[in-house]
Image (tube, rainbow, N blue to C red; front, side, top):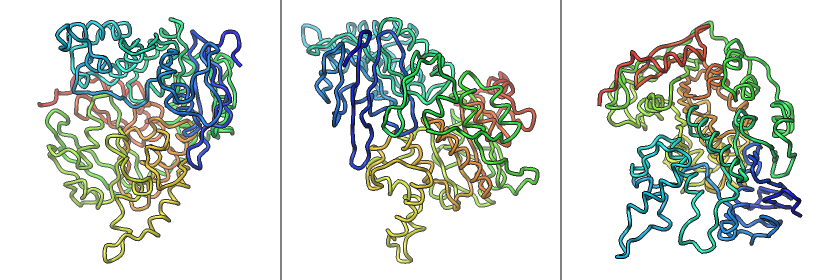
Length: 539
């Protein structure tokens, strides 16, 4: 039942997908004017609960009430009419259209002649967007905006009262599902300001995130789910990070310190660093790096018009070479070119002296790549989880005649699902049935194995909960222990410092410097990332 002060109540919610019990008898109450965090490991049920609240999913049991009025289960229209909005983790936009066109697609304003009224469309979009960011040009193509501003546009669309929609009401509850997962530090900070501003207007903001620093910076209360069950709702001011982590994973997180770099990362991390440091320090013992192994990956003079200029590097057996830099500095472009995805790239890439000229050649040479964007670059959503895990290695697993050996494939899939604790009802389902974190685990599991000699990792822990992050860190160290050469891109400073043996820093498409030993500090990374002496990229 609703209580005084409640705006929205999700009561006794249960939801099952096949064999997976996503939610089990969950009750959470949300008040107006607060930012209420939903926390938990990947697959804990956070996004499922958000979708039930927004009417996108019909629960098997339970009910959602707004101001004491029960909404029809699974009714998007009912939820919308009651003022419930949701902003999904993955951007659902048309980048080739303007900002205004994206915000008005649901109800294009018309002139008396029935033509699209572009002036009215721009005015309506401006009214929505400029309350959040006055610097956004609503007539510019959406795809030309930085990711942070694209996310702001998606939030602005959720604030629309939707003219022309029957029963449309102003927003009263907004669900933000991992809103900062793809943003830079500055963009994330701006989005946190917007989130607090929305709560200040009296909205109930339901905030789903894995970033601990954000939770303590912006949230008033925190609800933790574990394995689809309610654990606790606690005022954020009454929580500390170890307690929150223990609520999420059901155990204390052991934190053996890997070495000086991990400690430095914890000391120099940004606000979220203190919480993340617990997971970052939960690493396998530091591998011996005193004896440098032979060079496995060598890159010489790698260039690409408008993307990279004259990048050269070498990664040795058992070494983790970190890649630092700001968003847009060329980090992802460097990994794309090394893996053969950039057809315009020139230069030389070698794995153990063997030249790599294409993606097929890279895979044959034992190279694996976990890209930044799992949806557009990493996973095949028309294929099963099973096929996603084995696709690059089907020929290796096949018989001498080229027939697929399904038994061998199933054994490999079972091993990977168990080792990476992928929560899936069946490996025969699409990756689209998984939570974002479990999708990321499928992508990482695909490439991590004894056959991988070079591992390219671009933001491998984005969208992953703190407990799983610690496991990924161990897996990265284990891969290095087995002799893999690892190139790691990360925007999380403590993570980059903790995992790397050396760090190169990108600025404007060039490698602006290299750090090792005591020089590996956050201050030095930022100095090189903003180096004004880095030449501009040739167009």
